[in-house]
Image 1 (cartoon, rainbow, N blue to C red):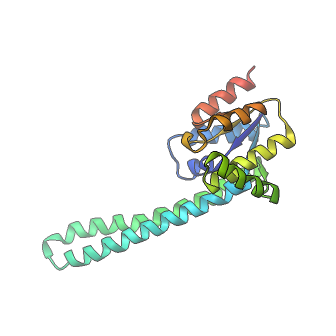
Image 2 (tube, rainbow, N blue to C red):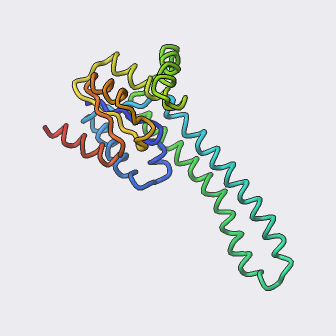
Image 3 (tube, rainbow, N blue to C red):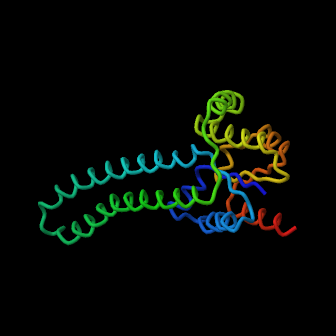
Amino acid sequence: MNVYAETNFVLEMTLRQEQCRDCEAIAELCREHRITLIIPAYSLAEPYETLIRRHRERKKLKNALDTELNQLARTDAYTSEILKIQSLTNLLIQSTEDEMNRLEDVRDGLIEVAETVPLNSEILKSSAEHQKEHDLSPQDAIVYASVLYHLRQNEPETACFLNKNSKDFDDPDISEMLEHYRCKILSRFDHGYQFIINKIRM
């Protein structure tokens, strides 16, 4: 069974979000050779853009808070409270560094067990068409084009495409196209895990 995952799958494990255990369980099924996990190469690179953007936003927030705290520090009555808040502003930067380290660990782990879909000229060309046809963002269009490219090259007996944000690919034509290649689209990783378990137990 082919299981296609996108950028949010990587971020879910990196940021330790609510469905990360399901993502880890899916990766473990791949490690056990019970499924084939397939990830567009673009989806292993795009999370860095997300984390870099978060880092810039947090750094901007920290700088703004530090400026205000420096003003408050002139008043002795706020000294103890300021020390507490300063530790929180430092956490903003430390958390971003921790997330970047986790991303590298998650990426390396997925590269070991999953198959990647290289980004080539055919995918880039078709992604531009999908972007216009389905009103997808450039990023989502590349992911969708990568999944379709792999499906057409391999034509698996059964497959699913896991993504977290259903509105990104909420287009009946997208669902119909994927179903044509026996690939079901699922918008939650926990639902995806249950779907996979039910399929491999049949």
